[in-house]
Structure formats: structure tokens, C-alpha cells
Amino acid sequence: MKRTAGAVTVECVRGNITTQEDVDAVVNAANARLEPGGGVAGAIHRAAGPGLAEEAVPLGPINPGEAVITGGHGLPNRFVIHALGPVYGQDRPEAEFLSRLYRNALALAEENGASSVAFPTISTGIFGYPVEEAAEVALRTVREEAEGLSAVRLVRFVLFSERDLDAHERALSEAF
Ligand code: AR6
Image (cartoon, rainbow, N blue to C red; front, top):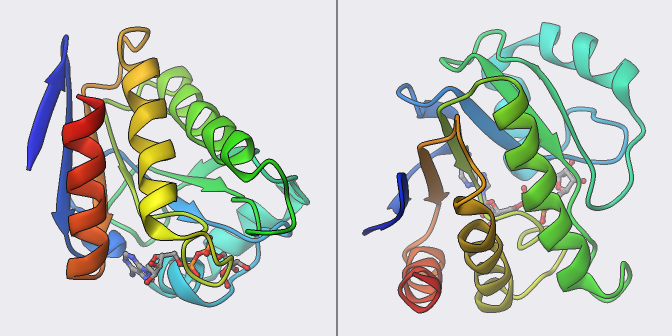
């Protein structure tokens, strides 16, 4: 499913964040130390190889809502944007941290001239954020940022499960 806002296309697809060959930047659901972990971070670091942690770890630790950028190493992407989501029930107000994360990640993509960015659903795994709520925050924030973007032309949400895809498609059609 796709929607546009001005020159920016936003789409939701089912898939794996490590195999998005046609995008400049992929976003990692990182931990504060920017080390390989489980979930998305584990998959991204495994696919990228050890050079990714060597570059990323010295840039940490980061706080919830923050993001940093590195090269893509063994991934098919020029950049990895490492973003730390809020832990649900702990980093409050969660929606503010999550919204800030999407703004910061998009700003890094802009500054580095990335024309396409792929996000997984951040905070909704180990960090416990209900996916419907997180999807609403994510799509609303992208909608708010869209008209200020000049490099980024495609924002893709890559969802692992049918349920996550449904939640994001609903949020996409509400926000756009
Ligand atoms: N592609 C797309 N989505 C995926 C993939 C993948 N390869 N793998 C998992 N997901 P999580 P968080 C989905 O837990 O909640 C790590 O250990 C997954 O099913 O990766 O922000 C870090 O080191 C879920 O829906 O991110 C941190 O400590 C979503 O991506 C912590 O987990 C996010 O799950 C971050 O937790």
C-alpha cells in the first residue's frame, strides 16, 4: 500500500529489513550501546558483518529518541541509521520519544542525501510498544515531516508479520 504527500511516497510492505536492496538507508531498532542484539539489530548486524559494530559502538551510548548514522558495510544499503526507541512503560511519554526518533532518523537521511529510507517497526518487539499505537505515531510523524523533506523521496515501512502490516496500513490511510 502506498500514499503520497507532495513529492514524498510512503509505503508499507511485508518483508525483511536486511534485504531492501533498492533503498539508500535502513533504520536499525538499536540498543543504547549500538551493539548487535536480538530482533532487528541482531539481523542487521549479522547481515552487515563485524565492521558495522566497529563503526557504530564508538558513537554510543545514545538516549531514547536519538539516532546516529553509519555506513551499510555488508548490507545492500549505503547507510544504516541506528535509532533507539522508548521502552514501553518506562521511557515516558512514549509517543514523544518515538516521534522524536522518526524526526531524527529522517533528518539524518536528509543531511546525508539519502533519497529512500526503510524503517522496521521500532520499539514494538522487545521494547513492548503496542504495534497499533506505535504505527499511529510513526505514520503521523512521517506525514508531519514530509513537506520539509528535500532529499528523501521514499519512506518504506518493512513489516515482518501480517498483523504489523495491517496496523501500519490502517495508520497510513488515516495519516495520509
Ligand atoms: N526485518 C523486519 N522486521 C523485523 C526483523 C527483520 N529482519 N526482525 C524482527 N523484526 P525489536 P525493539 C520485527 O525487538 O522493540 C534488540 O535486542 C519484530 O518482529 O528488534 O525496538 C536491540 O538490541 C518486531 O515487530 O525492536 C534492543 O535492545 C520489530 O521488528 C531491542 O531489541 C521490532 O522488534 C530493541 O527492541
